[in-house]
Each structure stands twice: as C-alpha cells, then as structure tokens.
Amino acid sequence: MSSKTPLWTSGDLNAFFGLGTNVLVNLLVLTGLLKFVIKIPDAILFGHILPAVGLMLFLGNIYYALMAKRLAEKTGRADVTALPSGPSVPHMFIVVFIIMLPIAIQTKDPIKAWEAGLAWVFVEGIVLFAGAFIAPTIRRLTPRAALLGTLAGISITFISLRPAMEIFETPVIGLVSLIIILGAWYGGVKFPGKLPGGLVAIGVGTILAWASFAFDWGFGGMNPAAVQSSLGNVGFSIPIPAFDHVFSGFEFLAFIVVTAIPFGVYDFIEAMDNVESASAAGDEYSVKETLMAEGSISLVGTLLGSPFANAVYIGHPGWKAIGGKIGYSIATGVMVIALTWLSVVSLLLDLIPVVAIIPILLYIGALIGAQAFQATPSNHAPAVIFAFVPHLAAWAKTLIDGALGAAGTNAGAVGLDKLAQNGVLYKGLEALGGGAIITGLIFGGIVVMLIDRKPNGAGVFCLFGAVLAFFGFIHGPAVGIAVSPMIALSYVLMAIICFGFTKMELAPEDT
Image (tube, rainbow, N blue to C red; front, side, top):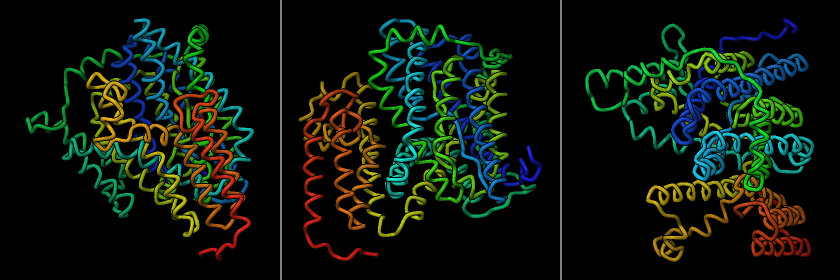
C-alpha cells in the first residue's frame, strides 16, 4: 500500500466507537437469537458459527477500507470515508424467525434449523451477486429522492424506533447515554482526555447499570452470576468449512426460496441505496464492485457456517461527519474477528447493558432521515415522504404480528373485520408493507417524475410496480404467479393515466 493515504486519523477513533459498537450490538443480538430462540448448542454457536460470522465481517470491513484507500489515492482527497459494513440487521430476524424457528419447531432439531439458515443465505447471496450487474442501471434511472427516501424509511422504522422504545424502558441509562451521544456528535462537546463520545456514553451507561445492581436502585438488570458463567465460553476457535451443512439445508429448498429470492433483491437495492447515500456525502463508490463484494463475502461466510449475510450499512454520512475515514473500518474488522475467534461475545453480552449502546442507532436514524431531504432538491420532498410510507406499514405489521403471536393467536384467528373495527386495517398494512424497500422506490420514483413534469417516466415506474406486484416482489407475502393481481391491475391503470397526462396541459414545474 502507498503511504500517501494514512490508514488512521484522529477522527477514526470516534467513528470506530460508533460503527464498532453498532456492530457489537448486532453481534450480541444475533448471538442471543441463536442461543435462546433456536437453542443452538454452545459448542456449535461459539466454536463454529460465531468464528465464521467474525471472518465474514472482518473481510467485509477490510475490503471496503481498501476501496476507500483506492478512492482516496485516485482523487487525491484526504477526507474519503469507507463504507460501513456489518451483519445485515433485517436478515438476522428474518432468517431466525421466518426460516430457522419453523424448521426447529418442525424437526425438533436446532442443527437442522441452522442448516436451513445456511441454505437460505446461500441462495440469497447468489441473488445478491447477480444483482450487482443490474444495480448500476437501476441506480442511474431511479431518482435520488426515491433511493434516499426508502433508505430513510428503513432507518427510522427498523433501525431507530425499537432502540427508542428500549431507551424509555430503562430511561436512566438510555437517556443519559443518548444525551452524551447527542452532545458529542451534534453539539461538538469535547470530553476530557479527548475520549470519544461513543466510548464515554457506553462507559457511563455501564457504570450506572452496575451501580444500580450494587446499590439496589432498581434499574440496569446486571447479573454477576451470568458473567461468571459466560467466562466458561471463552476460548479460541477458527472457522472451518460447513459445506455439508449448507447442502443438507437444501432439503428445505421449497420453503427457503420463496423468501430468499425477494430478500436477495431487497439486499442489492438496500446496498445500492447506501452507495447512493455515500455519494450524496461526497464519496462516489462503484455500486457493482460494492455488491459483488457483499455477495461474495456473504457466500464465504455461509460456506464456513454463518447463517447471516454481510451488508453495507446505513450510516456512511454519520461516520464521515464525526471524522471517520479508513481506519475505523479496519479497526471494526479487527475487533470483530478478535471477539468472535476468542468467544468473548457471550461475556460482553453479560457485562455491557445493551441500552447504553443503542442510542447510537438513533443518531444514525436521524442523520439518514435528514440526508434524504438535504441531499435532494427541495421540491422533491413529497417523494421522500411517499418513499417512507411503506416502511411504516411494514413496521406496524411487525408489531401487530408480534403482539398477536405473544397472545398465542394471529390476525386470521382474531378476524380481519374485528381488527378493522378497532382501527387496525391489517389487510392494507400487509399489502402496503410487503416488499417495502422496493415499493418505496416505486412510490418515490412516480412522485419525482410527476413533480419534474415527466408523466411518461411516472408511467414507466407504475408499469414496474405492476410487474413486481404480479410476481409478489411487492405487496405480497412471497414470490409467485399472480400474487397480487388486483394491485398489479391498479398499477397498470395508473400507468395508462400517467401516459394520458402527456396529452394534457401541464403547469410549470415548481422550484
């Protein structure tokens, strides 16, 4: 490597405690899901799965750091920020609750469930890799307001709202950590000894949690016995091939493919959105190279035993804003591989209160939401809102399904009419929220084209919506034939009307 571009700057420390703790939270969550929901044996979880996850995340962060290094040297700029990378958050929950848990219940075998998860990510990774070849065209033809608007929808609903609720369930720790984050990263507060704001927030939150235990203050929930028990999991493990487990999972292929394909599409569009977000912040990366790396690294991880996908993360502008460049990505990769290969994740799960870390996700959510408006023409703001709406529906449906599931029932058993009488239009939520990230692109694209007085372009987006709805990529529960025919027909009618607008007089464009 050339020495012209430094691998570490002072701003990387702040960004490392931001991205690093974000990835750490997700590692803790995925470990908890596998351990307590799927009941994966500790020997497999800590000796096989987590080392594979760690290597996958290490490769992702190092590769994107190398991309940043090349971009910095090509442009001669010293302010290039690497794309952030980590485990795909939506997929953590999808693969566990939609794929692995049903298989575990059906077979009474957590290993079979793990194998089904591996096969699911394998199929999804193939789709993601293939998507790299068409994503640049999609990015070129889709307005920025649609790309960033749907990204903001994901960020606010699925990245930020749950952490916000968790903060208010343990407000003493959560709000104190939050105000430290806001003061450091928005308010420009400099802490003694130049300590990074993220580290101060986590440290103060952890001290409060353990003080609560020591003095019986009633918040924090820390457990020394759990810490002692988790010490038994500390050791050293490296990833080993899991080819036989991956291909054993293909016995569930019919069950897997109906969600693996649409989520592969979801992945490459989300990654494309995140590359667009980096571009809006000043760093122009190749979307094709980014996606090929993401898909390839996910496949490597899966073949070694990881049932989770690698992803380019939301948040590049946030880490750039606090000084992150190349080193923060390298440091995150090194941290992850150390924690997973030494099996320290279980110990951290019991030492650090998660509520002290999650305020970082609120910061990212706010920044991405703001960028959707700041990096697009002001008259495209309505398109950002339209791109946002499907994610609200998907989020609301997730909460409703979770609440009904906890009560041992579901929407069908309760009755859609009864739910509607109480203000819950479940059928509409299900249709609007299905394939939300793609629906957001369609909605945003239609509105931008109309704002820009290009009704033919709006009609084309409507036709795309018709095709995607017909085959279930949007507005449906799974991919198939004639999944949502009435919605598909409605999009066709919208397209005809948009094409008809070209025959009418159009008012001058608002600016």
